[in-house]
Image (cartoon, rainbow, N blue to C red; front, side, top):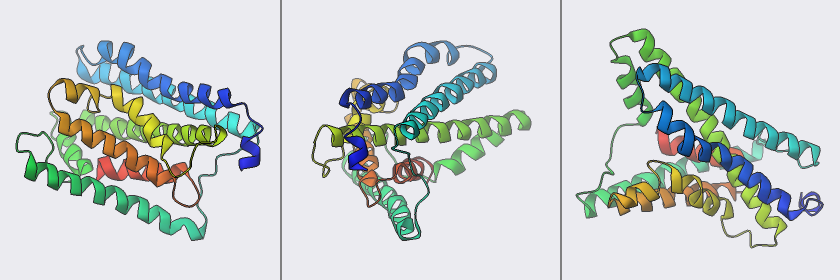
Length: 239
């Protein structure tokens, strides 16, 4: 794998890091201010989700296609020996998240962080309580399809940034992919780093940084698969 990476120009990896981040940036700066502020919410929300499906999916597709063309194909399927690392990724995510929540709630009574039931359960109940059951089911389905696209894109951002660090000769003991998503996705996400900090919620900003580093650390598990990062994000949000 390292031999393949050395054949690729360093700047190409940086460019693809930008390509993978671009859909998030466009969504936050241009799409969300339009689609998330108009009525009827279910219509504009659906338009927002469709944009995300197309933009996130296209970025993932072009990155994966380039990797295949460059002879450095992304291998998602884990071997039998790597199955334990999948389980460790999920357990690591849950352990770090819940531990931080307990500490935050205990030390900072005014924080918005709290210990709650799994998000996937809470959101299912929320959507099913809609006046229209059909709209509720549709909204829940579209929301969780969106999550799959978002998690996949974040995982590939980690993969690309970490591969770029290899090409630049950086230490592979450092989760460069996690640092990259903290400085990009984490900075502009509404519940990420910048916006909570501006509202005086520094604890949540630390929470997001910790999340990004955990996602990046999971990628460094034996095998270096984006799937590890994907599972960390999924467990962090859904469980």
